[in-house]
Length: 272
Image (tube, rainbow, N blue to C red; front, side, top):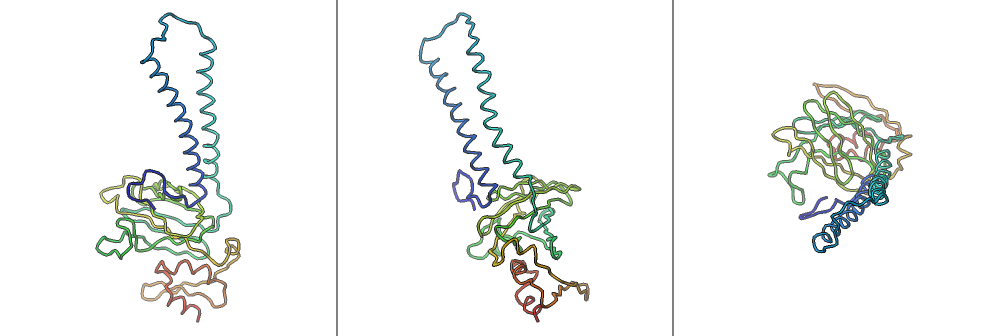
């Protein structure tokens, strides 16, 4: 979460964001050393008379100022390529969630175990509760288990959008007709806020993102073994989710109670 007058990064909540912060510090140190050297040379030339207007043949100096920038670029590029590889690597995700950009809200589809779809709209300022954040709160958060590998599939149905959460180190474009992929893992529970980071129209500033990471009693590996047996019943143009008794689904569905998809009353009825 960003704070007033904050100049640095938000607190990292994922391994990728931690790596990005380390790389930023690494690259900034190289920039600082180069800037200091250049500033010293400019200051020395302006304040002293140690100059020689005659042509000099200094082959060694030319070799140094040609090779040194190449070496510095390699030092910066190697960690960058490593992080780029880690950001694109997707290995056995525990959950796959599809985020779809609209003008001007987000919709989500949970594609594992059972398909769930819901929309996420901004909460107007007049409806905010004490402690909620203006222009960041949504009516339905995307709930995920912490310390689990989450694969995001991101697209759009109208114009360009961008699904970005700074504290998780995520910024992926949502392009109509194209499915982009990214992955992340939250290292602590909490609510992480983001916003659309691509100019998408008049209400571009009013389509926030809220991801809530919750702690599960089961481990991520146990989630892979959970089988949820459900049927969909339609009545009066409404869809009801019926969960068959006796299936080990309680721990997995716990994270969706706050999504208003399965509220506690519906959970109790499903267990009966």
